[in-house]
Length: 206
Image 1 (cartoon, rainbow, N blue to C red):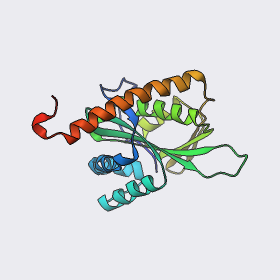
Image 2 (cartoon, one colour):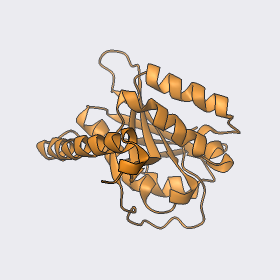
Image 3 (spheres, rainbow, N blue to C red):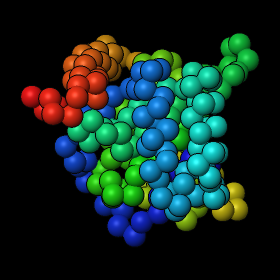
């Protein structure tokens, strides 16, 4: 189950100040820390049912082993939201398919973080030739539906789930340029972030 949490207010707003960038393979621990901070309702929406800490540890390990792409929203140096891209194995000659999933911590929901992560994820998929981006979420999740319909009207409601298919446009020089620019900024942010984590507490921020 792939979703962001239900909320009454689904207005599109700009995300708070922060950085969106892909996570490095060495950052799986901070991804797990983010998942463990999700409250019970956010976990339910993301995974489709009550989810224990051990289940989250297993999910983080599987994501790392399967080579999933994780795009994170960082508030200062703390990961607060993640868009996941999981490639799906398809037959030769068939459209390239991937599944997407989103998680945003409670305090950062309703602030545009999910929408911003979606935009970055669609562009990432676009530049890698992914033709079908599948997203599933609870039918009662108005916020996730609001995010998805900005990118597609292909929604299939089945019982209490919605299955959507986003079709990213073909890559263009401009879409690649945007990713290169984002990547350069990400390198700087990653360096600063790692420095902040490695320095002793009295030296952080200097």
